Image 1: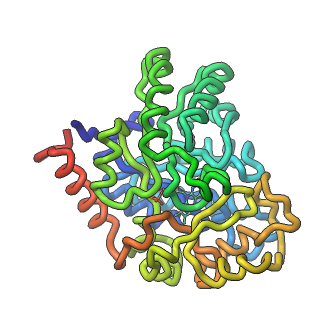
Image 2 (image 1 turned 90 degrees about the horizontal axis):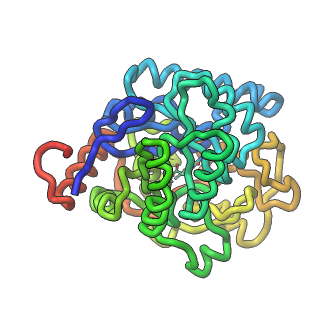
Image 3 (image 1 turned 180 degrees about the horizontal axis):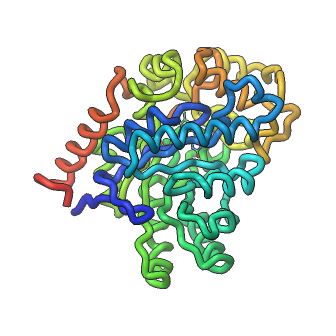
Length: 363
Ligand SMILES: Cc1cc2nc3c(=O)[nH]c(=O)nc-3n(C[C@H](O)[C@H](O)[C@H](O)COP(=O)(O)O)c2cc1C
């Protein structure tokens, strides 16, 4: 059993961990710099980084691009050689515009989920930025690989398999979440690995498979490596850290959460999301929340008769409002204190290696 460094965009990272993108304004330059400097891959979230800007409601695209450029450049200045990417949700409006913009920035990859990013390679032509995707079933991986092969002769830099314990929007329907009729993360990894093999042969490339959703510690990571993952994606574990860009109150809500506080809520995107139970989730059990403005953020939002506005509620909470939407992964309740990214990464790698019975170096 081996734990190998990951290679993305011809750069090698020491530990096979990707810090997952978290919006709104959770994974920006501070978190990503710390992650890169601790030897893992970092992802800035493209979900409304301009939220706090004065002009945001008038010109969300302009303000988001301005902030993205700023955050990327700051992260890059702090880690010249680190592997840095941006998470761009396919369900977001103006996907082609943002993807073309990001293809010109100093990043290594654009990773896209929340929908099927069938068109992503189109915007990467002539760019050094690589494309990758997030899926929640082997079937979705098959559709995307077949489409990217036929339309663009292009293979992803990596594939993130996101299971049912992940944070943010989930890739499963409300009915599936309620009935438990969904694939485990292990099954998604195994199915995706099988699908990828033919394309790896055809293109003579390695397509790393990354397992995400509920990876809290090194034991969780080792389980994924044992079923064939090349690495893991971790998000929730990195929220309650000194370096994370989110508000202190958001971090504290994560630390204070108990198992019974982690619930699923309907999102205006039409997908279930996972959140910490608070004023917002309790109110939603009785009625929809008032909407105050719309920046047309999601293609899939109906804009009327929706439970709440996701930009407003998530942006408020990540900026310090305890009553907003506190998106989280299923294992947030295991987080007991604030910590440093480097400590967390060191502990995860140590325990993972122990479980894999590896001594000394990585390989
Ligand atoms: C607070 C929060 C915000 C997130 N925001 C995004 C996002 O904007 N786009 C996205 O594709 N995934 C988002 N995710 C999903 C993560 O990138 C990651 O894949 C997933 O949460 C991994 O599971 P874990 O949180 O259990 O480690 C978010 C997750 C959390 C916890």
